[in-house]
Length: 280
Image (tube, rainbow, N blue to C red; front, side):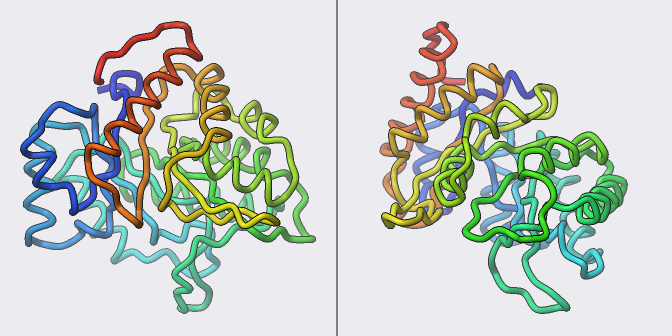
């Protein structure tokens, strides 16, 4: 399956396993959190393999720490490779960030300084990971609340150049662009327009909490109008890119997420003038 055939999907959450099984065909694909299934057996892996028989699956991780100065965790990469061999996902993604330093895991997706030195460092690590996995990596832009005085490049120029140097793809999180654009006062459209057209493999949509002076990327609310507007622009720039909705907390009923996914289909159809209401 190519990226343009995947269509609209949801994050696979254990709260919805039974409903998904009882109501097949409502989505085009699912994104599974890699770390939840990197085990030799058990209920989560049973469900993942069951759904894989009926749906395309993408694997999405939070622990690769591709931007860290610590050595790559080869045990983690071995487990991820084994899971990919078992599931044969459409692609494997993670975040363009670091999650800790000198062996300490901070359990957060921390942004990088956008420097030439960091660019060389991350590009080399991405190449090593891709060689180990035997497939191209897809990296997501993170939401952020700080910037570095050392940065020499914009985030969007850093991501675009990384995709070129490392021959990797981009998971364009539209909500994260919206959040960071507000927090750091940059033009969200400039970010979108800087992304190389042939590198954007997937969109993320999610909700957040607006605190007045800043926005926190919480993934526990419905998608807001401003993110829908930005998504429409993204679809016009990158038509046909697979889209999925993330909800990581305050998980609503499956039907509510299906309704929100219908909204994504409608926004995309209106943006491209297709008005195609097909499920996939």
